[in-house]
Length: 536
Image (cartoon, rainbow, N blue to C red):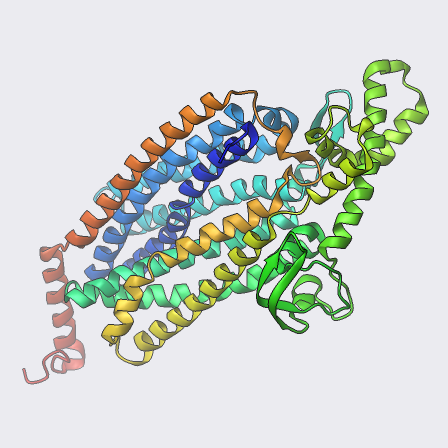
């Protein structure tokens, strides 16, 4: 298969982004779980909870460090491989990333150091505050990154400046409170909480199967199953909110997720499974559930959801409108201050569709010279790969419901069956460990690959966003990334397995002191005999 510069650059960014996203969900979730465990330790003063905090905190630290290393690469790529994108929208896209680095990342990195080296230097309450600040910093970091990503999907609070030929921010608050960004944030962090819960559950189940660290494993399962059940339910609810948001901000993506080629009468049905055929524009062997898609996408039973064919027709109208904006813009660039007022008014009227005219640059040097066939082809370019989006979404959703079932079962056993777990369930928990990462990567594919052919939806096509590099330049960096990331992956897995096999650090002296105090309280309370040993 031969790659052109755009495809190869996209491949590189997808590879590095998906690799980086292997670390993000676990960091988000483990930071919260560790803080919860330390909270219980401070409240109860029981050494087992300190051991749990230190053990899971160690695994969090390994994952955090390697996640940082891969995340830095991501931001450098915008300037190296996507220079025109950075020039065109950098004033807007760069602001949330700068805030993430200056506020969230520095906060997170500072308190991570205090968390690991402050156990014997800080009071229990002070160290607990540090643990929660690490968790808050991790989630703040995700917030600002997803604000930037959400703006690419729904570019509000900005407008094109014909004099500078760039997009410029008009409202920082609109960018921050972008409905797509907020929906993506809560959905993504909830998915991270599920990932960490499944990880803690699976590792703890492995300990129980091996008969090691029984107390730690059972308590970890209790915390992970409760937190994971709430998080898994949240993922479904918040995913539904993302679907509603897409119903009026990303109609083409929603139609592709559903493989809805034609607009049907309201309320639209949800296709449970099927085989989309993009060439014939049909979905074969479709099994549909009535009304569900209409409720998800519109929150009503009377509003239609546009099909792909209708959206392509609308895109063709916007391409033709964009050509008028492009023509006016070229005139403005040539005549500058002498531009007739009618030309400026024409540009203002059609400027929102300028990005659609830019799609024609893949077919012709000057969009004003495009033929009807080229305009129609550009309109059809707005349709992403339906088969990939359709199945990525369904596998992700199927795994999400599986997590709800698994967490509910372990929560029930932990709460009402004295933390006794069948061996088949423990084995299943171990096998399930990779599943949330698969779901997270599929979610990334739906979110980002489903936006194509746009880098910024409706504003900047991906084909125009790349740097002027040679294929050799990109291949060299891809090979370098593959070698470097493979090394990091081996280090990550090796360290994780090493510390999991090693198990928690057990402070024997502290545990013995606590047990002595505990037995003393039981012996002396109201003059009664020890509950632990009533025969005494």
